[in-house]
Each structure stands twice: as C-alpha cells, then as structure tokens.
Length: 370
Image 1 (cartoon, rainbow, N blue to C red):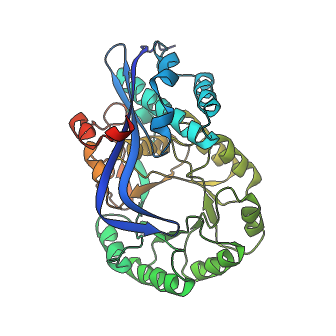
Image 2: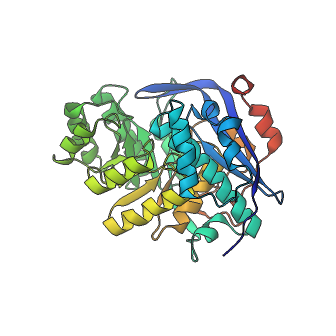
C-alpha cells in the first residue's frame, strides 16, 4: 500500500474578476466571476489544487476548521471528509455548502497525491483511463449583444459538436426563436437547454414540447432543485429527458439516481464531495443504466478535475466546457481549449495536468474575504 506524505499546509484562496459586460440566465446575472481555490502542500513539497464555486467556502474553510487535517496523510478518508463537513454544518453551513467545501479539499489532495507519484490523476483513479473525453460548449446566455446563431457557429468552428443554451428568461415564443436559430446554425448536432429553475410544471411541459420539436437532448433544471414533487410529476408526463445535479450533494445525487426522476445526472466534482465520490457516482450510474454528464463551470482547475474523473469512468462521460467570459481562466492553461471532433485529449502531466500560475492567482485574489 502506498504511503503518501502528510499534509503540511492548507490554504483557501477566494478569487474575483469583474466583467466588462454582464450576461444573464433565467434566474440571475453575472457581473463578475468568482470562485474559491484550495491549495494543499505535502511534506515533500508537492502541491495540489482544488476548486469550488460555492460562495460560502471562504467563510467556512477557516484555518481553525482545517487544522485537524494538517499532519494527516494526503489520502484523506471519507470519514475525515465527513468530519470536516459535519464541523462546517455545525457552524451553520447547509449540507450542500459543507459538502462542496470538503469536496474542494479532497480534490486538492487527489491532485497532490497523483503529482507525488508522477501520474495523471485519471491514471491514479483507473488502470485504463480513456485518452479522450467528449465535451460540450456551455454558453449561449442572454446579453444585450447576444446573437445565439453566431455564437453557436463560433463554438462549432472551434471544434465542439455539442452545445448547451440558456432558456427561461423570456417568454416561450421568443425562446423558441432562439432555439430555432441555434438549431439552424449547428445542424443535427447535439443541443441541450438549461432553464435554471425558472419554470412551474405547466411552463415546463410547454417548454418540453417546444424543445422536443427542436430535437433537444435534455431540459436541465426546469424547477428549483429542491422541488422534488415537481420533478416527480414531470417524470410521469410525456417530456424530453430531464437533467439535474450540478448543485446537489452526494446524498442528494444518490437519492435522485435511486428514484429515477431524471434522465441525466450532472454531478459537480466539488459539490458531490470530491473526486472519489464523483467517480463512485458515475460507476453507480453505469450499473443503474443512467446517463451522466459532469458539470464544470470555473477555472481550468475545475475543468481538469472533471476531465480526469470522466476519463476514469467505466464509459465515456460528457463534460461541460464553460464558454462564457471568465478572466479567471488565466490562472492556468485551459485543458479544453482545443476540442477536436467534440472531444479533448486528457491532460497527460502529473496530477490535474495543468500548472497553476500563482502570480495570476494572487492578482485575482479577493482580499475582502481573507
């Protein structure tokens, strides 16, 4: 059994970057990009990186909360992560926020362990990882200058052959025109739609019919993620496949998989509790005959983690590649910047396979939260 070095340092680094122009989805607006990095340093000097988008992470992952992990081996156990999550919940964190914070710590530890061994993370997770991972372009938001057909054509030219767009901010007839324009731009390639919880059951059924006519693969988050009754009701009606999962904890994802109320499970590597738990969910989904696609919206740290987990899964898993404006991508080389035929090559360097530029990290550090 491999003896991994202990954890010497743990640092939590919130990042922020204002945007020159906002963009919108059905239930919100982005005027800046924010995320939280976790840096782990082992006793031998090896560093690893994790990330979570959860806005509560900087306030939750205080030095006092992380102290008990210092000196522990970097192969942090599920029990230790649950101890951390429980401590965060005891301070008032929601189950989702606590799980996402602990998941970012676990992600950083996995990166560090793989780097210590000189292996790509996917190789640490699987003896035979997939060398290439299918991806889709996630963009086509609402903005003052939005031209969905033109944007979709640009993603197509960049090497993507699957696309996701936002719906639900405007009336259904206007969204139908946007969907039709994108469909014309991309031809018969895969198209998905995300409503970000904007609908009630009546509107979701109407949107589903419109999307089915446009051969859309899935309708993502038609309802608030906590409205279990609505998802159960929609699952019993004639509908296009429903997708859900980016903001769900590990326990919630297990429940959704068991209840089969959605057709596509969409874990986020941090929110689901980290690399190990996300891979376990993908393995369970294969056994259950369920579809999976990984959510990845953030910096190259999150993107690389999702790619490695997807590559280690029993069968290829689709990974979301954020195409919205994000200056925070400058902190590392983008492992998904060159898709080819709708796939990207798995990073082959040790760990996540990317090198984080700590000067850029300090440039974007949100010191109002530290």
